[in-house]
Image 1 (cartoon, rainbow, N blue to C red):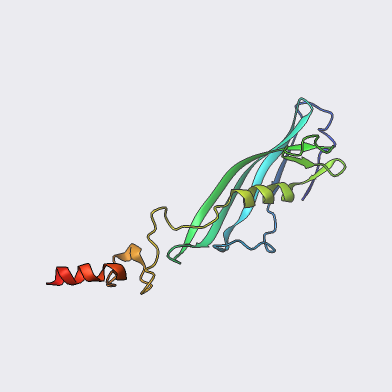
Image 2 (cartoon, rainbow, N blue to C red):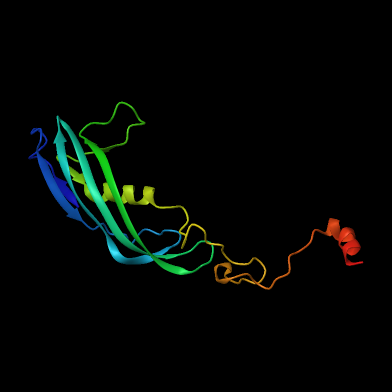
Length: 164
């Protein structure tokens, strides 16, 4: 969504509010199968003493698959983000800044960038998820499996001594 900022560019203290729902159809996220609530951003662009700053609250509902146990789960997502907007290229390449296109900013670009960068690399149903047994595939969150622990073949001779 193109947000027109010409009314506040020269007006310190001026603000323009916005609400947008960026299209995520073309994006593929590892561990996220879909959205039960679309990504929505509510925010504003404010002229702070000549510096345009975009602030927004992002929310979404994610349908995920756990990277450890493969269980499907839902996860509420929320993020507060802030970005500096500029009409000119920054002198320092390390500066995180979004360029205006004329007097407009593409809010979808800013919101999608913040969303993608804030996602976890792996989606987990819980921080202490035990995952699946590597032999039988049982979900270890439901209890231990019946697999016998493998012994190191180098220690087989010691195991024979214990059996006697």
